[in-house]
Image 1 (spheres, rainbow, N blue to C red):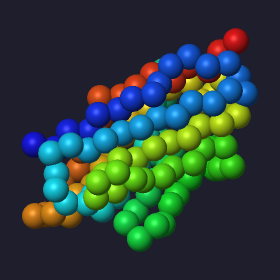
Image 2: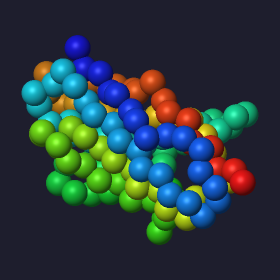
Image 3: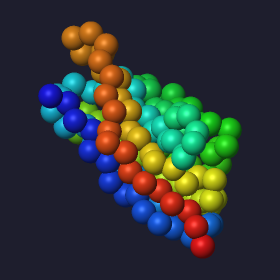
Length: 119
């Protein structure tokens, strides 16, 4: 049973930094893709950044130049999101997401971690 376990959320002042991490446990295969989504109160969940095997990354326009996604760990099954120059509009619950192609396509979600940017 694959589980995504997130860590690193919290409260930070505008202009500050946070680093989120998400580790996929229970899989001996490398995830094809790992990503971060976020959902602010009253808004739809949106894709923030993704990393696909082979190195291709994607960033939403609103976070380009401020957020950086990276993968490491065993089988590259840990995904990190370094968040710099945070703004109040970055406040949301951040969800880790993973796609596996081992034995058919499977998708997984983490439980979410709260990021609050406020003075």
